[in-house]
Picture 1 (cartoon, rainbow, N blue to C red):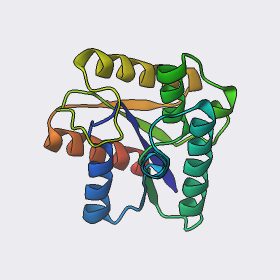
Picture 2 (picture 1 turned 135 degrees about the horizontal axis):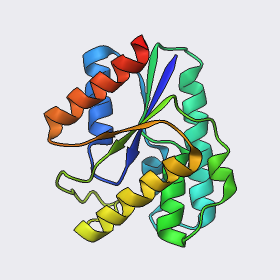
Picture 3 (picture 1 turned 90 degrees about the vertical axis):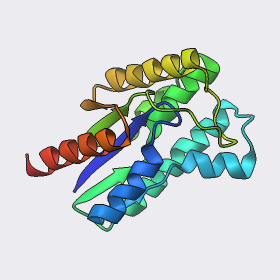
Length: 170
């Protein structure tokens, strides 16, 4: 089983692309637990909220992994929660780096229009760039392999498919 994690700033197409890949290839995906958490509990987050989101995301990832699909797409994982912790609170608890890691991270560039959905925080060009940099910093800190994804929607999908197939065949 190959676990591919979509990573990066808000509103960069991660969730939409995960759904497209499921429809196109049948690859199951684990939705972003933090979104459901925010919709249920609001967005006035504490560090305890972020830690709960990481636990919930990990539990969902473990449950989806039990079926052992050939490719499992993770809409996010606790390393993205680490980026949120850095953005919101200026530090990252070690616990967020202790969770199992994906086989490959795909780092989505903030080069598509930002769409407000009621749960997003960082919509300005400057904030998106900062969040993208912090997101990459978390991948570097964790020492995980990653590939950049950018461009228009078709380019993003092509880059993701190429990266996933390369890992699957490699």
